[in-house]
Length: 67
Length: 339
Image 1 (cartoon, rainbow over the protein chains, first blue to last red):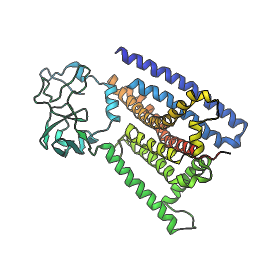
Image 2 (cartoon, rainbow over the protein chains, first blue to last red):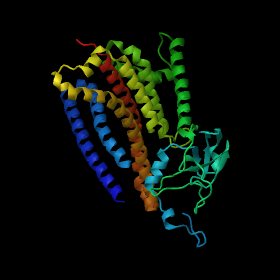
Image 3 (cartoon, rainbow over the protein chains, first blue to last red):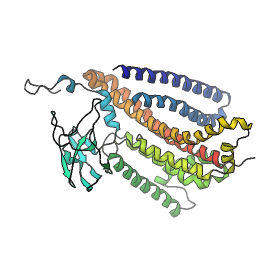
Image 4 (cartoon, rainbow over the protein chains, first blue to last red):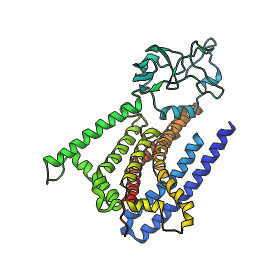
């Protein structure tokens, strides 16, 4: 029971971190697209890759919490 | 809801719905394929034992999952506990099960080597047939109508193939992209098709193939081998003798060597965790109805689950894209010529 709760807190903390990270990536990408709309497709690709890296960290935490 | 009479009263703990167990059971591999209601299709079980190969249908367990039904084949006795097959104990314990549990609830019985055609293996074979059928037809279209505009299935897949070539292969691999196109296209469509098959909740789908760590590890291993067998001297020089003062080698070389392995490990875990997390999320939302045991919860959880499902369709594509583009990126880094 106790271990379950601690794992949940860990997963929650990881989710907060990943949320902030992906929020920053998204906001920067939007600023970039607003400044240079013609580079939108390139920015989107780079944004997805960066988001995947951040998201992976959060998912590692979820997997560790589950195990 | 089941009404229990005094004679059939079950212990309170057994009736209680366990959301975690329910979700994990549904994302795990299985020896049988659930159709609807109480109908399941038993899949072939192939076990390698010291006394020879034991083969039988999983329906011989009659849906038992607690080790109560014993199947005898090739001079051995088997039981099924939580979709894993164990050697049966000599006699039944006080619950009527032929399996012993330790204090942590794990089964203590020994396990035979399991080569069964499980749900995931079936889906793997199905996706192979599907991929071959689709892409042999598409490839044939270019032979029959060479120089003409694409038609039918061909015009459906041409933009996606072009997307893989122009947005994934060319920017990352440079002029040598053609050598790696077969792998990149295969891995992209394999992951995408299987992500989509996993999202179909009933028979042809329902398995969680790309959310299975073994499958993603195999895919990442192929990328790992491609990267390291195609790495040129600049790639290896960058790892073993980077352009830094010699005393930094003590730190940098081990870090670079670990880096070779962490890249494919991250690839495997990213795909596995993304797909599994998506499936668990949908199951958890639907499971809330049974946790609160009220039909009114469904007015909230069903639309929300549907919304997550929509996102999952997007994730299915994005994860195939991410896996392919990162593979291309790592290969591109290994074959890059130094200027």
